[in-house]
Length: 454
Image (tube, rainbow, N blue to C red):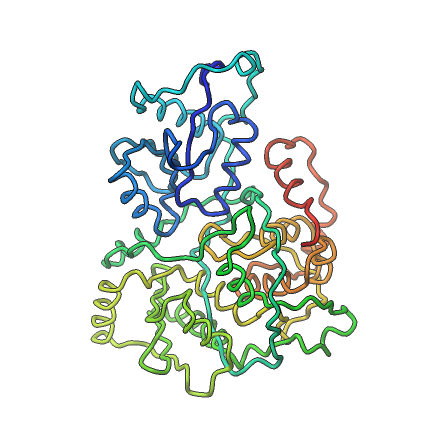
């Protein structure tokens, strides 16, 4: 532990996902209060960078080329770079505490923090969480498969601007670890070049969503404010038929790829295609996953024959592999494809083929460090992993618009994250709550579930 009279280190968070930002800010506000203080880039003594976040490594290299700063690098893989300290994931209070001491040793002497004020010197130090306790990241399941769409929606979409929803800043789910290899490592295993940093929608800021974020949330979750009753949901207009959309073809292709253990191609109009690579849990798209063309493809019904499954021959695979190498920035985790395409297809509506009134519980969190986020997504995951319920229960418990729960339900269900077995659900309901583990994560979860309707 650092000397309690040492002034906290001024750090700037560079390329940090909303998920990891929540973990760090929770640590900074508690056990790490005397170690770190967040500030803007110009005033920062050091940086904290998440190298697993798309584009982070490139942004860090460009920034430090003109403004050299020591940096704490967060990553599931070991990073060795000059003037940096690597902190492995999952994050622990001990690893962050050790990193504070090591990064301070890299600071130039004339940049050492000033002496503390009298109030700072006499304030008692906070007790850190037990060494080695992970802050947790979501259970890493190789990114969900993004978008897919087909024939036109059965319901018209409102053009109203959504109100600015609150995206809480809770920490990552307690019971999962980000230990799976990164897309770069998996591409290297497959003999392909690692992808360049992908452009992913920026996380929400505390000051409210930008116009681009608000527009994206409308595309993923719609703008509907009305409520659907559990008694009449199957008669509602806020339903969609998945067979009419590209999402259905993506899920069929994923099933075929896993069963055949072969790369599977979805051929689309205008010579575009999606290539599923199950051996490395990656997908390549000729369209950008987060682009308007792909969004339109997923949100509109498709005609028969517009999306066809194809198992490439050996000769075709050689050509496809070369294309992936030369355009690796369009390579994503399979989970990202399923997740994003499911959200766009749902658009805040319910899948008419599911029983929306059936109680479910979340057996594993989606890996939100690598997936698109939207308002209340962390709170929805948290409460659904704590107690079983249907979509109407969750929206009522959290006091949030149903559209966010409907969208989450569609995407998590496509990823197979729900358990619907009633015996298992009953066992989970009857399982006694353990009182002994009342540390960081318990406080974190209570904070996460405590918000209201926005």
